[in-house]
Image (cartoon, rainbow, N blue to C red; front, top):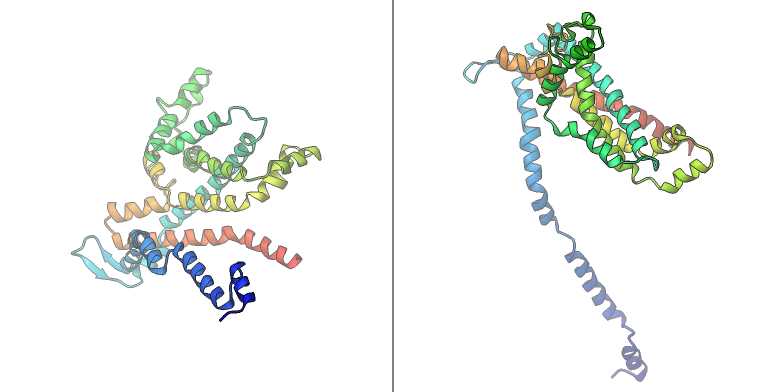
Length: 328
């Protein structure tokens, strides 16, 4: 029989040790019921993993396997080993296309991300009025197809009826008009302009969303201390949104390494091979020349170059992170 003290403890709400264990187990079970189990997680992730496997991993593996064969159709299928890779290093057109791609990536990194950062700093200022309207107008080209952008700018550059030709004639310099798309020296600059114009709004929206997370009091204190707009952008905004800028760099590199639609509709790689890029060259080799084995090698080469650019773009952040660790 329990004593009076034990009864009082029980009646006063004090739980004995043997009952505490049972209560704890019940709480754990209730908490685990709110979390999905391993089978449920697998069920949730399996569809997306299967789609990713079929849409990305499997095609990459197939392209790599196809790069060791020479074929123009399923019936003519011949194993050639590394012959396609040896032809890659002897092909002058592939290196011209690589140079054009690297030029495109470099110019668009400065143009797209640089202009987007400047516009984001201006539109996020408390003195900016109608920033929503400007943001919508700047973002509008992103909603258009790359093919449409190519044809629009082809009309702008047109020698006979283009907007530039009309403007030069309107100001009395019609005799200075030249066929812009026929100039080998400047054709890649003309290709970069439409791509910068279209994707500035894309990076602008990403940067503006990152800037909304910055505490306004930090910027107000900086203004009180006498910082101007450039100093706030350089020493406060830029370091705080650096992870977002890294993501923008990755997106810019991947988009410009697979550039195809703009150039296909604007110049089709011309004049000659002056504006040819890797994706367009892979398309022409595979489907125009029906050399799909060599086209697969070019695709593998594009993937390899893109991966190298990703690693190079991460080096400054990795070096600065190690310096901070050493300083601390």
